[in-house]
Length: 136
Image (tube, rainbow, N blue to C red):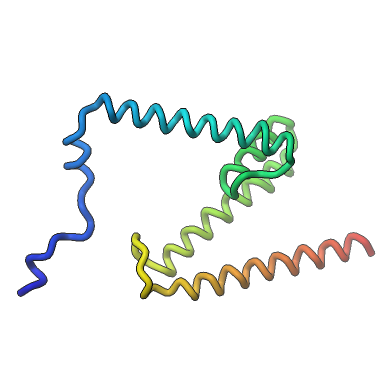
């Protein structure tokens, strides 16, 4: 059969990791940690503190959650925790609906986009109705 001679699409990373020396790997890990620290610092101090806006859904919300936790504002801490949880849960649901770990045109990305737009529209309508109830 032709299918038996095919290479597997998922390659075990263990062989690749063993072939590298430790020093470049350590340098890569340290550089990644430094870049993460600098990104978090910039996000927390400059964007959240000065502009009152976050850079992205996960990092911005986690920075704001840490700031609110340090202030002792547990209501807002819970709010940002729920934002992060919703982001992660949405990622899991999208992955479950689409399936697989690589991009392919044949997958059902349309279904995920329709569900996402429905959820965003519902959230917008909920927010608008909340604002109208607060002003009345």
